[in-house]
Image 1: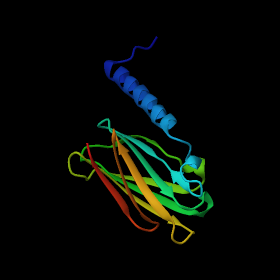
Image 2: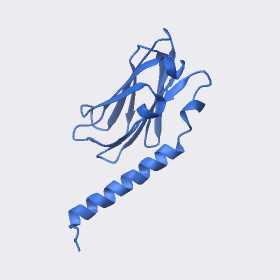
Image 3: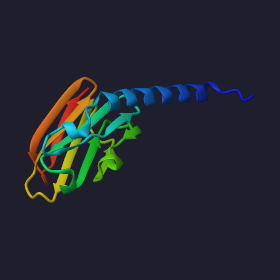
Length: 151
């Protein structure tokens, strides 16, 4: 019989806890098809090493078949890293990517969203949820939409 070290037990417990929180965040979200009747929605979630949960979303005024790419760039405080990323790429059929940089000022969590579609001028609303704080900004595709939240 194998005995777990204290560090291994702590890692296992932390991983199980993060997975449970991730599932709760995932289950609390409405299905992507409900976001906009004539549009679509992207909704990745990140769990960071400092315990921060970031839920990113982009409401896009175009059909799923018209979405070419969604690029999220997350900026978090130095010393943080991504522990878990739950993305919707495979679920919705378009190219979604998340980049992470630990280059934000202390206490700031910034998400830049850039959407490209074949629709030509689709409206986009970028949403960010950090803990219980929410921020959003609206614009057009091919426009960098940035939300900065303090924790």
